[in-house]
Image (cartoon, rainbow, N blue to C red; front, side, top):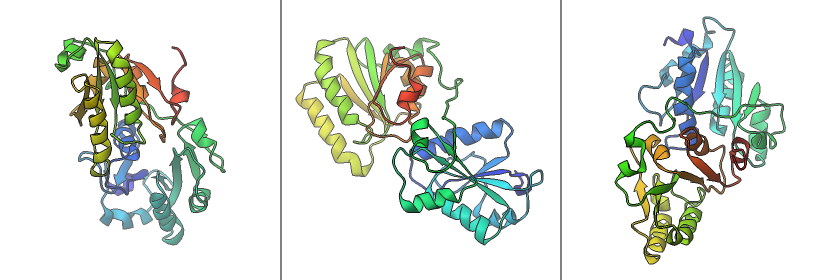
Length: 287
């Protein structure tokens, strides 16, 4: 895409994988397919994303071909700071948009940055309740072509090769924030009374959380359940696992939003979730 045609820039100024990274990876290509002239800027994103290079930044002084200005869509403080510098110091024709998923009171500096945005989006009503500026609530969604109910034998739990007749799953990075320990403790308590069930945990274990994961494995071993509570690590494609489990558990202690219950429900899998992120807004109690 030529810079003169770009109308929206989604900066991504963090190399490490995060929930924001996942949002950008899933959302920007969908926006591009819908006809929005959008590119990303920054590291940590896969090849194939619509993107611009750092050396192209000076071209932003020129207005886009079909609009009076471009939208700079920030999701972090550092990206808001960059947008303010580009708009107010370098006088580039930009409008600044900030999406807030945080469910906590912002620090004074963050509030100062947010007040300088041209528009603000909250990803849930709960997130919006922590904002002191006018905003629009626009919840995340997922692609129903990618996340769908079981279609063939490969979607059955038997295709996994794991023991048991049914499975309960917990997917995401293995760490205390995600409540992986709550899931493990619940499975240690429940599985002895439910011999046909296996618990499946997928997700990355980063070096700083390796000791946490090792402690969980030690608890599982001590309970004699290491064949029925399984850590699978990162899997190449998480989508079949949503279809293979009969129950998905989202035990997070805190979340910005949390897409996994939506992905599970779109896969026709029942969900039990904590009251974190937007879980209470996306799940109909008892249905």
